[in-house]
Image (cartoon, rainbow over all chains, first blue to last red; front, top):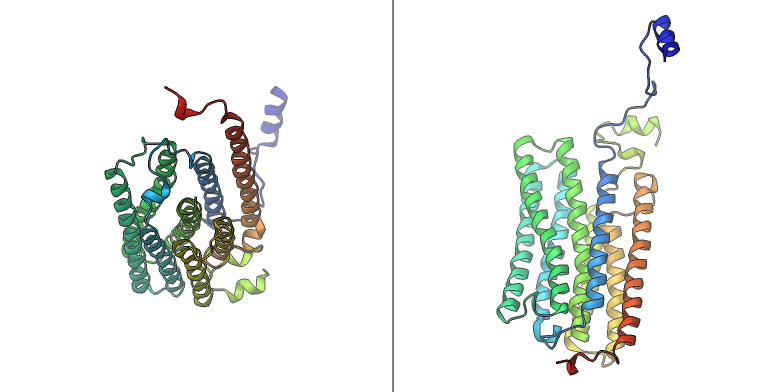
Length: 211
Length: 128
């Protein structure tokens, strides 16, 4: 110790512990990759919920089966809403790249309305099922169904909260670099939810009706 | 990729020219949307009308179409490619796909066999 301090005091300069010629990364340069890795971890959550549904989905406990509960017309309408919201978010990203703030806000608002319609239809479906006694407590099938579809619905809900927040941010501060980055993250999140929904309507609804 | 492209992209935001996140164009979004509408409509139509009598065949077609649609969404909406972020998004995705496949097939396989082996022992309908 004494030797080390001696040496420093002899040199008379502060020890430097970082790489001096560290090259500079602009702020937020790694955000997109980081967010993508978050989405992948989210993907694992959904994979577990899908696996749970796959294992428990046939255990009706003498209760209602998918055929008694699901209305495919409603699910098709729901799928349409989410698909339309995906393309309108795409338009928002395109207008954002052209720095047209008004049009971006308009497309974001339309996306939000489609997302809201999706949630409304899903909640109507849930309310209808629960009214008929098909609650999460009824059977293992319904527990896993509500967990899987409900988790997706929660994601859409938080996506909507995020969307409104970013619309306020954009209205206040404009399409700054930070806001563009945030909008791109939400874009990935939103399209990712659409991908998960493909799994939901295929595994849960379509294959459920075929069972 | 070079200092030359730096100079050309004077209005560039972020780090894009170093293999950052990819962007879509109007054309790619519309192609993706068109494909996903078709790939969504066919399975719904198959199941709702019951055109194919064999349910196993219908299920297989529905699953294949879903897999194709997921790839379409990945490419046209999430702009997946091997170049963005120097290939790290692709690496992360491949890793996730491997994990998901192991978890899903493993769970379903093990629990299916468990069900088969447990069934004769515990017929729940005969329980008091």
